[in-house]
Length: 155
Image 1: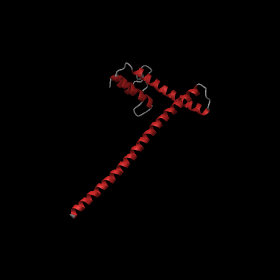
Image 2: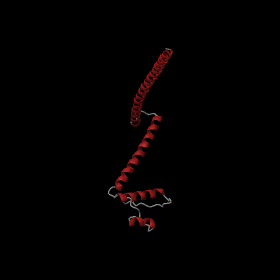
Image 3: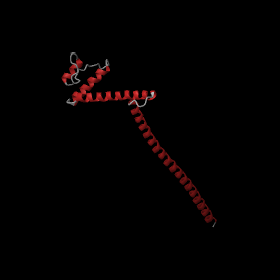
Image 4: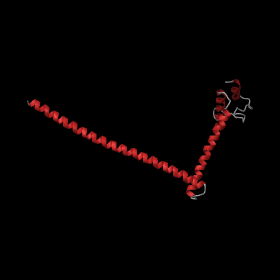
């Protein structure tokens, strides 16, 4: 009977250990859940705060541009924003120009035009440079050399 008593004691200790481990796991899961919920709430609050800051910045930008607020530090930031806006507009205009320039050309012609444009912007690279005429981005064929020959031969 001693073996039965030992088995029961082992079983009771095992059950107690399982309950203890289960309780610890449950507490840890609860703690993790609470922390996750709080972190999620913090993210939502930060997102709301960032939206309000963006609105404030837009309003301040409008006020400075309308000369309703005159603060040198704000005026400097507005000037920098305007410069960035100018750069953006210039890039957008460049895209529009390139798209118009390439319109109506076959893909093979567009590829040649792009290669020609790249060579023209690299200057004196090992691949040489190619002048581009103002007529649709075609290479300037005024020079009679090997580099120009491949454009007329279709290579």
